[in-house]
Amino acid sequence: MTSILTNVAAMAALQTLRGIDSNMEETQARISSGLRVGTASDNAAYWSIATTMRSDNMALSAVQDALGLGAAKVDTAYAGMENAVEVVKEIRAKLVAATEDGVDKAKIQEEIEQLKQQLTSIATAASFSGENWLQADLTTPVTKSVVGSFVRDSSGVVSVKTIDYVLDGNSVLFDTVGDAGILDKIYNVSQASVTLPVNVNGTTTEYTVAAYAVDELIAAGATFDGDSANVTGYTVPAGGIDYNGNFVKVEGTWVRAIDVAATGQEVVYDDGTTKWGVDTTVAGAPAINVVAPASIENIDITNAAQAANLDALIRGVDEALEDLISATSALGSISMRIGMQEEFVSKLTDSIDSGIGRLVDADMNEESTRLKALQTQQQLAIQSLSIANTNSENILQLFRQ
Image 1 (cartoon, rainbow, N blue to C red):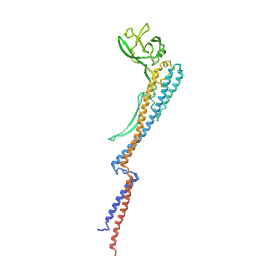
Image 2: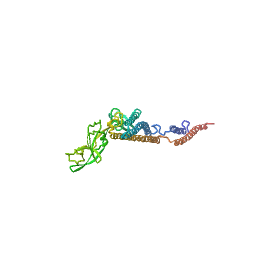
Image 3: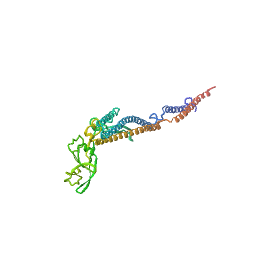
Image 4: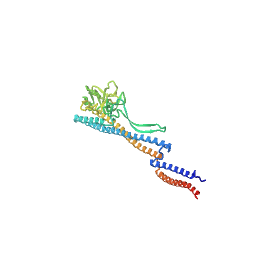
């Protein structure tokens, strides 16, 4: 049926053209934005995932910035600690040099003073953004944290993980309110020990007792009688060794002596007046408080007591050096971990971006081909509509004379 009121062919052609125009608008929007899923109406599930992951990526970007800041703090502390190790090694070398007979201890002390001031300068200067990990109030240990990662678990709960570093007596050079830092605390250093077989009532047992160098006894004012010695009137310095008493030489080593008259112990040395044996009541080596190089508790080898106890002082510096090396290693490990975490976060960010792209990005090759096809379809639909409209005009020919 042909009607001038209802042009079914034109209506169909118009509907087709509208569909093609709608598809072209969608395709042009994808081409202009580069997104296949630009709004929730395009694909609610993919849009939701992409939006959440973009948010997480922004958080990871903040983590990366925080890692950079943390790395700067750790590297600053590490540089200071590494330099402190070298300075303390110099101090130890100076103390070793001071043990040589005839050296000018006053001159060596002047060099040590300069080195100690350098340690103070290092601790003070090793600060980044107001953070100083080399000197702190150690009344209570302080934990410094560096942001390490941003995590979202399977239930959607988010959390920020940190890398922690504790400031305490094993990691800080100077205690700002006390003397608990590596360079201002007192180290308990033991005298050298020797293990000797001692015969008591026919039974031989090994005992570990304190050993003393002959130079120490001479410096303490000992009087010698063969392989026995006696020290009286020795003034014990604060934290120093009490050399007062009797000593006997056994197997080439000087140890504390005891009168064996009533002990049943084998006689080690008989000076004609007293029979001497090993004082086995000295169980192990006596502890000596030795001050590490610092600005609070100073080394002063011009002091007679310290000059007479250089070996123990050197051992104290050695212990301080071991603590410094340990703290430097800890900082180096954290620096390495932060560097690895920075690299991981960078790769993770790229992976998330890539994953989001797979979900929502438009395939420009496909969209370009689609647009070309739609343009062709649009031209054909317009032509079809034009033909449908022309069909109505043909009815006029029926009414012409």
